[in-house]
Length: 226
Image (tube, rainbow, N blue to C red):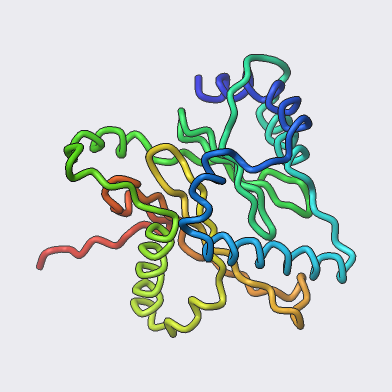
């Protein structure tokens, strides 16, 4: 059922993307509040493009990433349902929030690397806990701060230096009720693409209302009682 929903929506999304390359209005509205975060993301993307150009690598476009998902799901035609589309240095991330489906596409090869289900239904179930007087929406900066703090603790847990956190650029995808925060290893000017370390930084889903980490991959460890 979920795959069918994606199949009937991708065709018109492709047409819509050809007509506009602007950022979503909601993202523009919140940009001023988190300007430094956007600056960090934009700088990382620009650095990545410069390095890729020097190495002779070409990246697929936003439209090509959507087409890759369409091919992956076997989409042909249907109604328009616009996903959240996030750009990272080496990946495109396409999220259908209604179903919690996320597709990750490699920018260089155009291959769909993964398809996963995000646990967004957990957030909707807890959204009535706060009253209008106490409800608070976590900002992009808040979400990245929460994820960075947890990532730093994870590095300590694995007896790794917390300073390694600076080797990663955080990217935050804004959903209606959550933030999808991911980290990408930052390729340095002297590093070649084929020599990049095989890293596996954590991926986060953070409740906008409470700031709670709803999901982390790898999962949060639970201590067992003695």
